[in-house]
Image 1 (cartoon, helix red, strand yellow):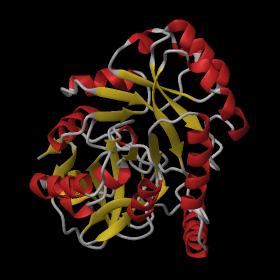
Image 2 (cartoon, one colour):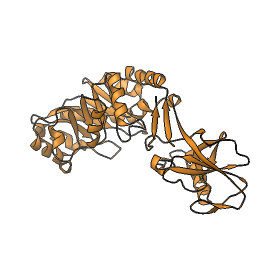
Image 3 (cartoon, helix red, strand yellow):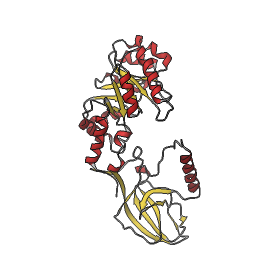
Image 4 (cartoon, helix red, strand yellow):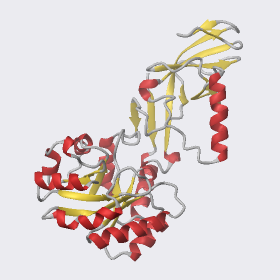
Length: 341
């Protein structure tokens, strides 16, 4: 009983190498659930790529990439604050992100020689020092080791390169240090790095690890099958079956991230229309599952259970207990039971 992620390792690593070769100053990002592969596995792959620094999301993830064999520098992307404790600032291999003037003062008091990157506020409006605060940074640094300015850009913007240019210029006028960037296209990054006179870094996560979908597949196992008739009540919620067919019990449920979705960006009209239709179907009790059985995605009988799900296959059964069937997973929120390859 398992949800499995199967990797065509050679093809996947060829993709990883192509991204690394085309990205001078690459910083692999390994955070959260490790993009479905696990943080330890991503640390191992970053070592094979020859990376000299890796980025994690939070302080607890430092130990996880080290468990994968990583021994080099680690930058923590979530900004440090005094509420996080002092230990991370004292670690020689850890680079902490600072996004507020008060936190910069507090960090210097803990370790006057801490390794840090300074985050600049972008149109993301998530973390960062405001442009008007940048001139006040230099006098606060003392002997701290500033590894660079970090600029975290939105994925969609009218002039993302223009924003990066303006923020980089303001940051470098306040204190010269390398630039750490994210969410720039390769051409945008190449243009900017040729324009500035400091070293540049580009953090890459999704495009690196998930950018070659044909190198992986996710599957679930058919655990059981039961013939049902139209009108028969089944499941926890005793829903009536719409027609004769089969209830197929498949592995995977909420514990694996099955049917757990992030809010849609709905940036385009077509995306909004799809969201509206999907929501209307769910309101009527018809929720399309991510499982493909007999060549088509099938509807859930009811919301997925913790470690298994019930889907409805109309007509005659054409799968058997023990078969593996495709299941579409959002790998950034998924927890698979087994990784092959």
